[in-house]
Length: 387
Ligand SMILES: *Cc1c(COP(=O)(O)O)cnc(C)c1O
Image (cartoon, rainbow, N blue to C red):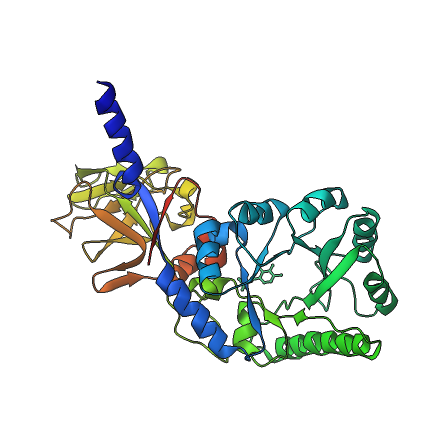
């Protein structure tokens, strides 16, 4: 009895993918391809700082960062202190920059885990300095987004930070807020942001201060590729996606999606003409239909906005979502896929046979961008990495 239980348990541990109700497949060779593609766009002297915040946009921060380390990436950025500590505990090596605000009372953790903190305003710099511990920091410059950072007009404040003896300034950066736009006024605005940042850099150089700089996230890399920076900060394009499909871009390299999202048919039923399906009775069968229940819902990150709108792939064919997406389940119409059976795989994002559902399409249909769609994929989903 004991051995049977034990074996069963081991079996469970060994084959999580077979047991998983729904899962993400993470293709690390696609990640490598995207890294190479991005490096090909950037000047040789510019290094990728991989953005792995929010569980690497839902892909799994640890397997993604470990693989990036293997590919030679030595610079990472996360949003929070906890995300940085997770990477360090997993022995990710290189620099890890925290992009968000960390209160100065967390200085011991920053120091203990060798994390680089963004200085989000002058007061923040003072407080980090007063913590009395040696800290690596990057200074954030606000060139117009007005979220975090110090205005380049406050040159004396910026200069003062370089003289703070507990802070080692290992970088300075800004963030563009309309780099994805091809509207003439947005381009003028973005060029102004870039110009003001480099003017500041030059003023510091005149004072004998040389500091590595970075400006571009994904769309900055694509639309403003040649900037003389030490780093660039790709997020979404690292994962092989565009944020949406509506933008005209200066460069639009073919990228390979790293993630695909799958579920497994739990149950199949016949619905008679006139019967309704799901919460709110939002869908009615206009003829005899065959439906499959998939064990994945909005708590897993499949947007509720796709109720009666989305579709999935089963046996290489599209099966439309019928009724409302529930927290943990959803229903699709498989009338035209007679071979579909319980246990069969449904692909919500990704390829099946000749068909493909891109994350971009799903995001647009849900009224959002891939950054949100992917980063909200839930912790209940297994992540299976393939090479
Ligand atoms: C999230 C983030 C990025 C990455 O953005 P993408 O558009 O996904 O490339 C870069 N820089 C900062 C400051 C960010 O917060």
